[in-house]
Image (tube, rainbow, N blue to C red; front, side, top):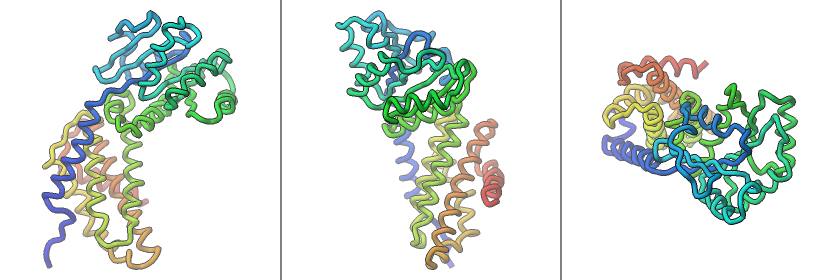
Amino acid sequence: MSEFKPFTDEEFDRIFAEKSKEVNDQLEEEILIAMIGDVNAGKSSTVNRLMDKEVALVGAKPGETQQIKKYSYQDKIIFVDTPGLDDIKAENSAVTMNFYQQADMILFFLNAAGTVLSDSELASLKKISEVNKDIIIVLNKIDAADDIPSLVKYIQDHTGYAYPVTPISSRTGENMEMLQNKILELLEGKKKEVLMAKHMADKSATAKKWILGAGASAAAIGAVPIPGADFIPLTTLQVGLMVKLSTLYDKPVSKDRAKEMVVATVVGNIGKTIFRQIVKFIPAAGTVAGASVAGAMTISLGYAVKYAYEHDMELDAKALKPLYERFLKEQKK
């Protein structure tokens, strides 16, 4: 009986090159984030906590108006702090609106400790939404306010539930993971999330989000009731996850090392779980078996890589395999 190989060397090389290019292309993209809110809304402190750097205190460049401030982080990530639309001269309004139109997203700041969503704020939101609907409403300073759920519902009711509302405290750090996830979700649709995630403070939360997302996608692939149909799509998904995680943690992974780790972990489990290719001939039973196995294998690989990077381990097949088996065992519980 010939040795079973889920992919050829040429196929793996193609997959690795494809996924590496996707990530590298993202790293070359520029991200523009426009921010609007009064001077007490905590825009600078929010950005600094998100990035875990004093972004708003370095790299400031004079704007086209005296009120506009631009903060460039790592050259490619640009935050633009804009004034309220009712606070600028009419001749500067077009310049400000141009920033909103060009922005990848707009962070619309409200002060939970002040007058939440005043008439002028609502008017500004409506005007901005006419040129760009990629808006996240940031309700800051929740540590200084009461009944936050009611405030969030008030904002949602008065904005037609059109935008995500993220209640945070840039002072205490409460719910910053929620805001980070919302920002990355929006950038994912523009294929720009990797660059932003690479420089954000909470890498662990991002890694977990990517891993669980890949696990769900793997389960969908594994549910296809055709023997052998999942191997190439699963390998593509898993290699893509490994490349993204290596970029997130700034731990470059070579093609040969990636192949070695996939073969030692995921492929090594194919023999143990080959039954799923047989049971797929049986209606219902095959779908559940294939989906659960594919999802567990992908999540386990992701968590093993994440653990190794976060513990500064030299990542190779020998180090990864016991970690993978440990997380796979947890997934099966």
